Image 1 (cartoon, one colour):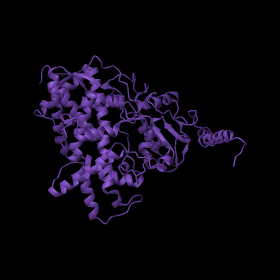
Image 2: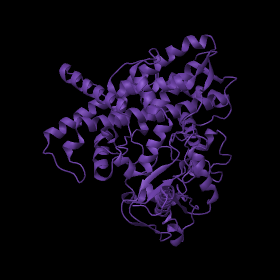
Image 3: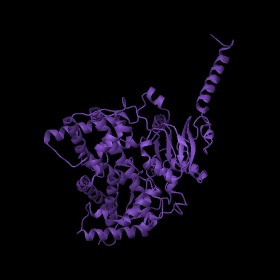
Image 4: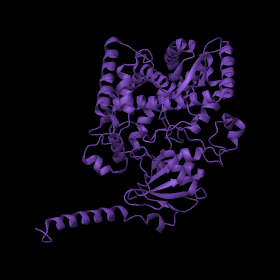
Length: 517
């Protein structure tokens, strides 16, 4: 049945009507924050206040957040919109503390959508919610106790020795080295040995399958960007079309690797102090228990091969992407700041000599200046530029009386906080002295958020820091690092990635130390 006598006019009318309906659906709630008396960023159809880096042409996500932060810096918070959905952007650090720690029970979830029925590898702890997350966090926490970490340091030390061996002939020639590539391979090797018990040595074997899978997992294309955007903001479409968070080739690799490793260890009675051993222990303990049932997912369901694979993937992905990024930027700054590198080298030499010519778990605690350097690098280049939490039950801020409805997303702009000149004067300058005990004591405790804070902070923080410390100690102990002539003084960041990743190779000159103490 036609509305007019012309098919063409009917088509135009249909398109206009459809557009009008979509417009109304998206914009009907754009006065949400205005009605509540909350300062807000003016939303626009169709994305609200989102500025997506569809082709990487806009600024990085951290800089986009900083635009909002700087515009509303005198407010406690500001309203934003993810398409039609109102969200709250937190500026005041006391409120940041309330969300992350003090009133955490109202902000337990991260709000990431994963269609786990079809995408089993996405059912990892980062995505889990409520009681399911709480139980998994409790089970995996023993991986990162002092006892476990002490057992892992020998595995890490072997990899850093491989790093030294790889760089020595290059240093003899004062060669130009792509630090980003070398660091990526080193972190893959550390994850391979500490999680899977594998000696892959991608520094020597760059075509190893694990390196290829890591590259696939972290690669950003237009298709992968749209997939992640849909998963984060348009949940009904993600579920309707079974959009996967993790690529099937990556999921299959992790599942087969875990299955083969578990079977090998069971057959040969192999025990290692690594992540898979912990998962095996948790699964065996669950089988021998009465099998209590939790609120969201029963105990048996949490410990299937698929869910165990998801935790292994998260360990691998976080250990590869975030640690590699943090270590890469740190080395870049050491190359640019010779005075910092020399002071750090002296501290490493002193600790090395005091510890009878070796590094161990205990001596890694004895690097106060190194910790200052690492913290400053993490301030400048926080691996994740923002933190997100979902309000899981109605919450009223005690200072202002604003009530958040259940389901409202909250954004904490870590990058913007880290580059607030009122908190960190001259914020784009690399200055480790910001993190001296005296200077830290003068700042708000939530002004430095590279690992998050509160019960849902980064579970692998101590593991990652140990990895970075050992790698840095090895590098400055044996080599001098200086910038290549083609290394820019300011690194461009990949605007298509949420994580803070360098867009270009980081070329440095690696040389032998003039005198090894």
